[in-house]
Length: 215
Image (cartoon, rainbow, N blue to C red; front, side, top):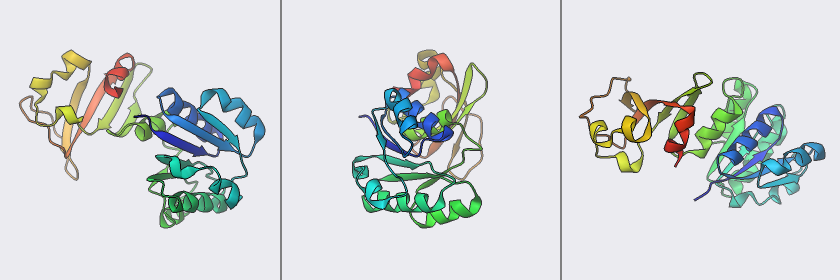
């Protein structure tokens, strides 16, 4: 089932996030008050809407309650961000993510209901998109032009099976580098060790094989 994501604010980061989420297969509602930006992204998302994101009534009218995720990407506008996060939570959006330009802004947005804070200085729109789009990804790094490193939970079909049984390198071209449980340290994987729900895997994969893990 496709995820539906609304991205509010289409600056450089928000625009990149919206476009990458759409390319990954999400239904994306992209919103900005600049009509030229909305026109520019209209072919790179499911729907593009021009709205005053500082106006509570216009934000409320976007139908955010139908979204799985709402991303408030107006990092330089604290008042608008607070209002948008509040409206999204009031409408029952399961996950509200906000971009923050400072530690103080991050703290405030968490207090008004943001479930996750984005750090645009530390992550690209592509990285954020992959983490938000996947239910398994915990973190995502681009090592170079050919290789990704992924921190993820085991897929449901892997639970109760060992690395030797699944043969991820042979069947999916995925290399498990390390494993840990939440709150513990990374360790090398014993091929006979059975994967559990609370495991977190550190994996390396070539870009051409990313489709194997996103299915």
